[in-house]
Length: 237
Length: 283
Picture 1 (tube, rainbow over the protein chains, first blue to last red):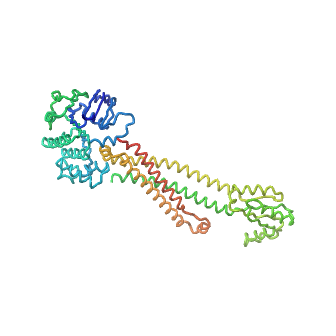
Picture 2: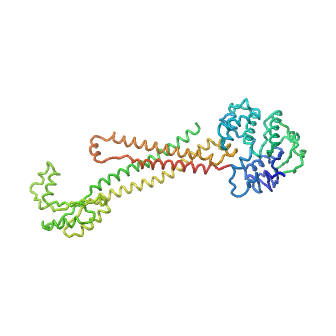
Picture 3: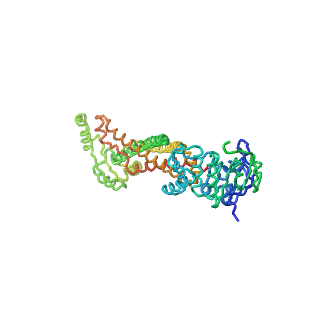
């Protein structure tokens, strides 16, 4: 039986402006599971993911990720938590003054890998996301879709046991979306836990993975795949 | 290039602050050296009462030599005193014509042992001398020695008060300018947080930067002070040069320079530490 990778119990998040982003959500994701967090824009998907990577603290409730109690008083092991996960954010968070390879290798270098080893691994990962021809290009020379792929490569290069991806295919065309999904599927089949936030129901329908539907900060369903209540949004809309 | 301006500002502030502190240190050091030279020349003159017979002089000399702290005692007769004055007056010694040496009191010139040539210890010897009834008056130039000691003391106090204020200033400014440096690398630091770089990995380069800024700032301040010190001699009017030769104007000794450089490094480090505590919290 798989262990619990993520556990959220009665988690709420209210911003100082009194906007409630999440209301009493409880969620369990097992190790090795692929879970879509599906919901329209503004439903709370990003907040949920930001809480899971401890970029934000919930107002109340308990969060456990990889056995670490993120909501425990005095939790200080943030960098250890981040090493267990690959994060793909909507805004890419790439270094504008570096090349494509340097951006991916950076994730390895800062966690103790040698420069040479990092460059080689980055190179390998970039070929997996179809950017082998652009390795030495400055990051600003890439399109939004290509930058998205660099962000994905950087998240995956450390082979983390957990991937948190916030709209990772949001800037990609249909073909590239499928290519990227193939990479995620491959990782999933190798045992990586994947939490994939998306507003595109077409994508969710295509795969028979678990879907956690979220609307106005509340989770609407459990394990059963039911996308009928998720507003229809297609890639490119 | 983005880091160049904040770094330049930080180093400049450290240079100015350390230069002010070092200048006070240099002045205090030279005045202390001067005080030591003068203290080495301190001697006591004990004037004998008029009418003290020559028979009494020898036992009195022996008694004075036995006092603690006394190294050499020399009897100066009224005739010796007159000769001394004539020598001092040089071509104007004719002024002394018609004056009888006997109006000058006989005296003892008392040189002290090295450990006793300071304003505190000299008083102990003077107290013993005052108990000897044959002495009319005892002089040792106490007023100017004490005044000079107070002056040096005030200067040292000012140096440390100023040093303390500059220290707080340096830490504050270094910390604030380092925050600018950190801000210019905000994007990189954010990604480091994102991919799990350890806090030490993120902070250590800033600590090293603070240390180097302190070292460089301190080093430049010492260099400027040295140039000022050298320049002082270039611009002394020839009329003052002969007088200045008697007063050695020393530069700071190597151990003081080492302490100032170390102090600069510690301040730079502390500034970056404060900055990192403020803005490098893991997010």
